[in-house]
Length: 243
Image 1: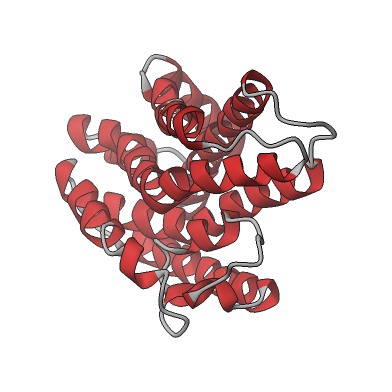
Image 2: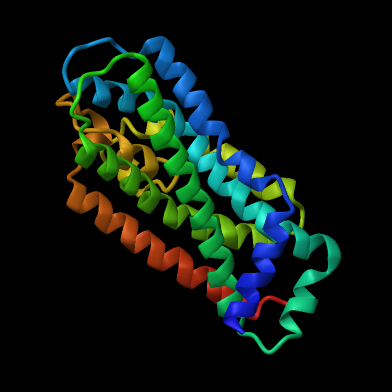
């Protein structure tokens, strides 16, 4: 039945504009980089552009998109009584939760790939020097995706809990806005799910400050712990929720 749930989710998503939302943040970040990125003649220009784009993408739009994707994936069930229809089938609620979580991750992965494509386009249009620092770029993008996983699990649980489509988005926006201040805190930044994508995506340029001083080992340990906590909590809540 797991495959049936996956097919059902895919059919619902295929008819929506949710895929277009994945391009919003990369396009805006790319436009900013075209205006602000330095024209240098060595590979550091790629990291400068990555920093400029990540400052907008990972600090603001990536956390917001995570909440939007989670809310949209639950909207159909809330609007049409789809929860009762879906759970009337011989499926486990944990399977439903994991499939929806997987689609949120898929949409975030598409967003990150589009971000990489825009970064390469910016670099080539500005004449950045080769070789492209693939290891740093891929590490940043994969780190940003991994850092979104706890937030994705948290926002999915909130979206399941509240049938009002706007409420989870409002909560997500409220907690995203303080990011600019919280990433400056070494004590609180690594533990704040909305700030973790920024901390994971920013390249190491030797100008670390605040939470950017935290080691990658510590940051990813916190992210993994948050993922386990929010994913487990979300599945337990959903398994007990009356629909």
